[in-house]
Length: 60
Image (tube, rainbow, N blue to C red):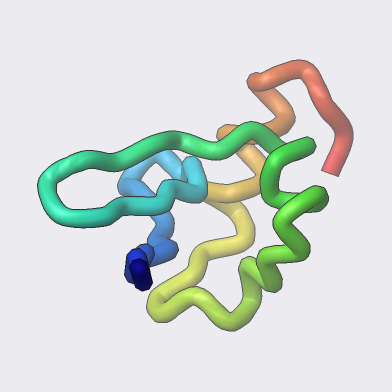
């Protein structure tokens, strides 16, 4: 069985994965553990990313 996921940046700067009609916001730790290169995400905005994940309590 193959499952395809879409990785994208939400308007609030969070990195999310979706499959079908379901989505999950990823924590900074999950992004690192899954080795997601955020710079490869279409329309990625570093300032939004930084703002969101600094508010999560982690350093960027």
